[in-house]
Image (tube, rainbow, N blue to C red; front, top):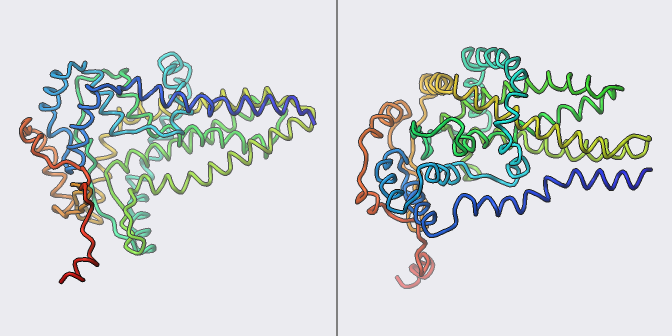
Length: 385
């Protein structure tokens, strides 16, 4: 066994993880950790905790940003960081985000080939009602209930933001880890099963499977932006449909990646291969898959996103007609309040955003600060009575 090559290969594979931890701290400093950024974040979180849409207070937030001397691009970046927070898996791929404008043109041929697959999957999954009936059957099988809880960034498209602005890239980057790790997973499986002499052919075969998987994921993630939520009464939990899909894929892809990386790296070290080259190819493919993933997501969401969300929301209304709720947090207490059905909520959501709330109304919103003395003890209350 080539122990030296195996050690170097293992170190190369750990480079993204070693970079992710300090990069997470650097990202918080880059987004803003000073008084102005903290003050603006507090106002945005106050809107979120109250169950309102951020777009309803757009004019008030713009006034606050001007008073705090925050540039509009910085203001949008702070909001994107709150509404689409990055996790450790995002920071593993964050370098690809900064080189995206340069590498987008390299990924363009793959994107052009993949878009027809996306249209085909959209026709199968959405127009043929496969997804909506699958959700309905899952609701019946697991004895769950599907409800509608609009997220605070819905109907808040900012027309002032440029397409290449970092805040806009963060919005689409939120789904990239799922696509990037799936792309690497596809190549590792092909490399394990076929074990061809040419890695180029393996990458080509894996690329075909990756485009198909990515097309399905892009359509599903776009459709699930309709804010449907599974309610599990037995376990007392709320699971957004998109996170439910992610919870299914994460264990399969995550455990599979660890197994295949360890197995293939050991095979390269034992059979006279090149573990260092294998590790370098893995890192390059990981970043390439993330670039292709965000490009797919970006292009598809800009081109077909609104149509897919509208069509899927209409199917949900027509077939399931779920109730719409507000999720609020006031002084540490979480409340789930029914407002209307999903049909009425969608009809009124975009009308309400035209009526902007004032700065005074923003300040009057309840804040989510826990009570300093804590909640009353019901046992003590019963004893005293």
